[in-house]
Length: 147
Image (cartoon, rainbow, N blue to C red; front, side, top):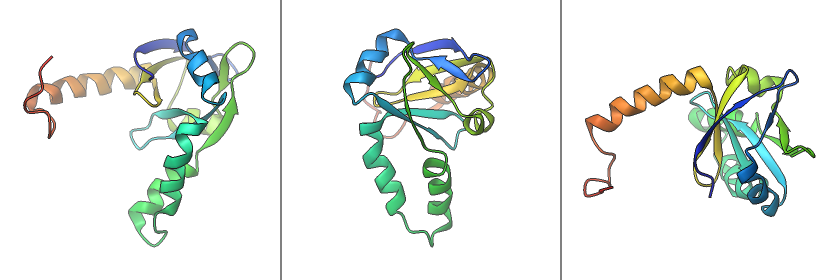
């Protein structure tokens, strides 16, 4: 399970070091990862084996449905399979860096099965919005939830 948030730095070539504590989990899941775009304008990082059923579901959507085509263009169209290099880094392509507006400082945010990779400024804005939303009403199914 990928959890926690880490602020990291992209190098001049667009590489970022995956947090050390998560490298073994990625390696044990086959070693390769898939990066793709998310409609919130962040980049998703999945272990390849976790991505395969998601990619298959998206590809199975009807190409005659406009909304389904949008999801296919984003999720499948931007999908890239990579290997971590010897230093535990991944290279985020120029296309994905542009899509997510990823500059020098990025946030890796664990989401259980995958990571979201955000530009730090965009993450701060999204986090502020989330805190306002959390205070307004709980999501469906969490009415009796307590911490």
